Every structure is written in C-alpha cells, then in structure tokens.
Length: 347
Ligand code: DCP
Ligand code: MG
Ligand code: MN
Image (cartoon, rainbow, N blue to C red):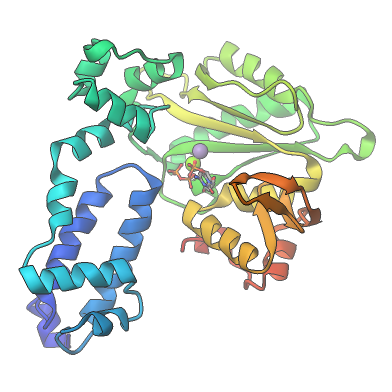
C-alpha cells in the first residue's frame, strides 16, 4: 500500500488482511505457546501483505511473499475463493473456546481439557463442582482456586520486589550463591507472567548448592512469600532441579504469582542462562539451528554426537559430548548466531 492507501486503511489485499487479522486476534486471546507462535507468524504475514503492491491471484504468488508459509498461503487462497476462512469459525466454536479456558488451569493440558469437555464440563464452575466425575490433582485444585491471579501478568516492578525479598534470604543460606531473575524479566519486558529464578554456585571451594533449594523454600514459606507448592524438586539430583509454586508480596490484597526456580550445575550456567532467558520461540529457533548443524542444545549445554532412537526421538541412545555450556557467548559463537542481548531475543 502507498501512504495514501494506508491512511484509508485499505490496500489491494485488504480483505485477506482483515480475515487473517481476525484469526490472529482469536489466537492472541489464548494462552498456549502454539498460539503465541501463530500470532507471531500471522503478524509477520500481515505486515508483508500490507507491503505487497499487487492483488494476489495464485497460490504460487502468495507463497512467494517473504513471511508467508505454505499453510498461510492456503488460507489466502481460501479467502480469495470463498470470501471466508473456516478456521475463524472453528476457533470461535464452543469446544475450542471452553478447552482453552480449561487449559488456563495450572497442570491442565490439551488432553485433560478435551476429556473434561467430553465428560460434559462447559465452565470453570462445572470443573469446580465435579461435573462428569472430574477429579482435580492437588496442583490443579490450586490452579483453579487462583485462576484469575495466575492468568494475569504482573508489572515488572512487582516481579522485582518479590525477587528482592527472595535474593537476600537465599544469600543468607550461602553468600556465594549465584541467583538471578530470568525469563521475561531478563528480556526487559514491562510485564511478567511469572518469576523465573536461576540458582547455581561455583564449586571452586569444594562447596555446592546441593540442598539450597529445599532450605530456601522452607524459609520462603516461613516468611509468607511462597504460599503454595505446585511441583517440588526431585530429590534425586540436588544440583539440577526445578521447583514450581505460588508466591506473593506479604501485603494485604496482593495477588498470587507463579514462581519457578531452576537450579543447575555450575558448568551448565551459560546454557541455562540461554534457555531460561528465552523466549520460547527464540529457543526453538536456536535448537533448530543446533539440530541442523548436527548438535543438540538444551538447558545443560550444547552437545555433539547425540543419537536418538528413531522410534522415540525423546530417547537418547548416545548422550553425546558436551562442547559448550559455561557461557552464552560461546554457544552463540559455535552456532554462528550473532550475539543478541536478552531484550533482542524474540523471534
Ligand atoms: N522455555 C522454553 N520452552 C518452554 C517453556 C519455557 O524454552 N516450553 C524457556 C524460555 C522461557 C523461559 O524458559 O523464556 C521461562 O519460561 P516462562 O514460561 O516463564 O516464559 P517467559 O518468562 O519467557 O514469559 P512469561 O512472562 O509469560 O513468564
Ligand atoms: Mg516467566
Ligand atoms: Mn516460568
């Protein structure tokens, strides 16, 4: 569109843009990371269409636009041929809407949500009253009780305030701990969905952070900062563990906020910083790049020679050799990705 046309908010492909925009808004209202991925790619596609000077006529033409993938190209053709997009009706349908609401309960994924729907649940109230014999796990019950709190994002300042309470308590256990706030906070976002805390420690003096997470959680409960546990760390590996729970500012009327703690071995700190800073879409791109180059990337490090079972890709028949893990910089370098500051890591 030229400038004049943009002002009138119309261009030659405006009908296509409108439908894709409508679909994007429906995905925006949903919580999953797949939805975020779609919002991102529809956004890219819409921007590309706005800059496309001619009326699209064929699939090949749609496909040739940078930012338009095969599936979106097919949607464009559907809009051209029928004037409509069935996917919009589908996304608006009751089952899709209701199961997305259910997935806002902590610990409820797609399969549970659709099972509850099949059992006759149509609302959070139905779930609460056990319609269709639905039973909640302890974590899901907490997720339902604090549904609104958990599904609202906190201002960055609140995440900072809570972390400023947690950090000195952790350092009182061991002053040599490394403890940092990660996730969207480290990326500089104005709001945070939760508080992601990473813990590790240099074992050069022979001491480690083994047992620290457990001690810290006891103290945070005592201080009224951590209020509910959702998933306790696995006791089998105290150097590398994950905790999920709820916390709050110890003040009247403060909301429950999700707290994640990730403890990692010192040697993995760079890979863990990279993973835990995200965002998830950026991580996906980095993992994909690593895989193309024959490597494997996770929160522990960058590995060479990982062999996976072709029948189940999750099973590693060869664990491979770790080739980088101590700094984010070396991982970027080996993958041939120009350094990006945390706030730039959004794909
Ligand atoms: N992560 C990932 N893949 C996932 C989940 C998480 O790579 N499926 C990584 C990248 C995330 C980081 O862990 O940035 C923290 O996860 P969160 O779910 O807390 O996401 P964010 O902190 O990025 O966003 P939010 O503000 O919604 O918490
Ligand atoms: Mg987070
Ligand atoms: Mn998190």
